Image (cartoon, rainbow over all chains, first blue to last red; front, side, top):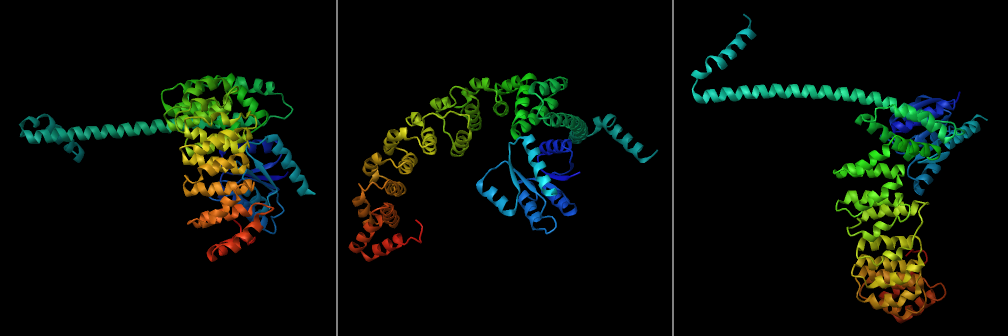
Length: 124
Length: 381
């Protein structure tokens, strides 16, 4: 079973994403702030990480940067969620190695399909 | 007899049998002490009771929060193949059973539905809007809008705006020109989203200022809302409200509304220098060559900032009609004017640089250095 980490500071969104991904058959780990997410990333290995950009303590970009600079974990797909679609933020995300950008508001089923695709790609 | 019994007996005796025999100042002091002790005890009791009640409310809140958020999280993870009516039909009876008269439940349900509605698109958005109406929460939003308290009014406006309750637009219009700036701003933003026939009607009646940062908010809403049909904003360039004119000028510029050219030219003689500056910027951006003459007419009466903008606009238009005027600016006492005029000349792709070289041989050493600087393509203007 593929293991996914969701890092999101909005509790309701975190719950919705957790429910959806569990329903899709993934093993889900959650973090409600950047520091918690960073600890989990350091201690565990995930098949995909879904993280909000703006979170307390540690931002999504820092988590992304940590993963992509780690020689063991850098193949893990990282999907960034953001409410701001500012060009420079998107470019910075892709420059750091983000695999995809999800803009709020988004379609939950579309997100589910994207995650499926990234996990498949990573398996083969 | 232990210490406490002796102490209480002494106090009792003091306040019952001996009180009348004390001198009056001691008597008054004793009564004040008694009053303070009773008041302090009452205060402690009140605090204990309040804390107990708060803890109880917190418990209830957490219980309902858990229940409602689980219910809504289950609602939004339906299968894509499920029909909207089926999802609504499945969840409506469950939600109907909630004690919506309970303010905690009501507030929680509304706030959580708003969060999901704001963050998700597609069927979730649709289902939540239908449920919001079916549960009568739209009526509650309407009641809030008619509340006396402006903060509650704003809450109602936000709810109606997020849930797209368009029939409430007629209720909101009266607040779009309210003297309370926060209420006015919320109402204007909501009215644009909700009004189906005339989303810009509020501009016709706006007498209060549209604050600068709210102009940015309205600009974002108007330019990013793809469902909005955009009118010609020249209609409001006559408005006696300068802030309406400024907002509309920004929109004319963004939507490149050439039909507003005549109105924009007229605004060059406006009493508000910010409007004049914006008009000049638009003339430059839209390259309205017919406006060159009007800019020239007003040039000498303007402050330096606007003069610079006019020179810049003349450069962008580059019709060649005002080359002599631009060349003559090199004898201005202001370095920024000289520089802007030289860059304006350079902007003419055909003759600009050769004209600058001609000028180079006819002018002072100081000006020659400046021309050399402008001609250096490594330096950006």
